[in-house]
Structure formats: structure tokens, C-alpha cells
Image (cartoon, rainbow, N blue to C red; front, side, top):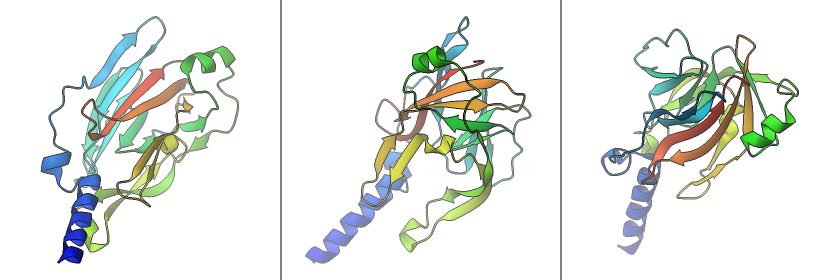
Amino acid sequence: MKKAFCLLALAFALASCNGILSGLYDEVETTAPFGFKLVNEAEGSGTIYLDVRDYEKWTYINLRERTIDSANMVNDEPEPQHWDFALHRYDVKTNGGAARETEFLTMDALTAHGHYDEGTFVADTAGRVVVDMSTMMDGYLGYHDSNINMVLSRWLNVDTSTMPPIYTLSGKVYVLRLADGTFAALLFTDFMDEASVKGFATIKYIYPL
């Protein structure tokens, strides 16, 4: 009986960590101010708050127009016409752009250094992302093919070797080179909302550099 109880407890722990018990863990009401906030027009800087809990969706960010859109990849919804980078949970892709990780931990350090075009920029590569977690307890997940920028996707490391998983922010500033040749700086500062519910993202940005 004790062994059965421990197995049941572990199953619930696994489910809760990954959002299967969505009614208890992923659908918590939040008062976070989603969208572009705290924008400094003169400096072209601001903060973006995103709800990226839905595994089936990509969330698209247009830095120039400061707009946010989403599309369900499972339902083959079309991407918005104009966008610069997008998030799927903690995966990131660009719209024909490329990115590099810097050694800087603050925007001020990056702008003081300048030379935004130095270093190696990495374009997106073909990959796949998780779209269905409901079969996790059966030992497999549902995936969907998608391009991914492996550099930008390093903003958050999720270590699933332990339960609950360990989430670690890189803390690094990333430089995004857009398809039109302009540059943006991105600093991912959180993966939770104010209630500590995971599946949210907070991003400081400067555009254009």
C-alpha cells in the first residue's frame, strides 16, 4: 500500500509540473499586464509580457509596430504577415533573422560596448516542438515540426532530470538581427507570472539598436 501511494504521488507531481492538471496549475487567474508595457519611445526600449502557456500556439512579436499575435500550429492557422520573433512556451524562432548570445547581463552594458554586428549570428534550423503533454504518463509526447532558433531558445534551461524540474534563466542579453538587417537586444527576465505560474515570459528589449 505504501509503495502504491508513493507511485500515485509521483504521478501527480509529474503531471502538475508539466501542466497536465491544467485546471489546478495552468489556468490560474492572473493580473499580469500582457503586451508591450513600460515603453520608452525616445530610447526605443520597453518590456514585453507574454502568456505562452498554450503548447499548440506560437506567439508572434512585431517590434517595429509593437504588436503581438498568435497562431495555432496544430490547426494550421497562418502566421501573421509581419513579425520578428516568436515564442512557443520557452522555444524561440525568428522570421528570417539570426541571433547571438552576448556576455552582457544588462542592456546598459551592451549599449556601452556597441558593436552589435560582431560575433557569430545563428539562423533558425528545422526542429520540432511539444504540442501535446496529455500522453506524458504513457511515456511519449506529441510533437509538431517547426523552425527553432537554438541560440535564443537558450534563454531558459529546463532540467527535467529531477522532479520538479529546475528552471534556470541564462541572464544573458541576446542580439537579434532582423531579416531587414536592423538589430534588437533581448533580455529574458522571467518565465513565471506574479503568482509563480509557469508558462509566462517577461522580455526587456531595445529596438532598434
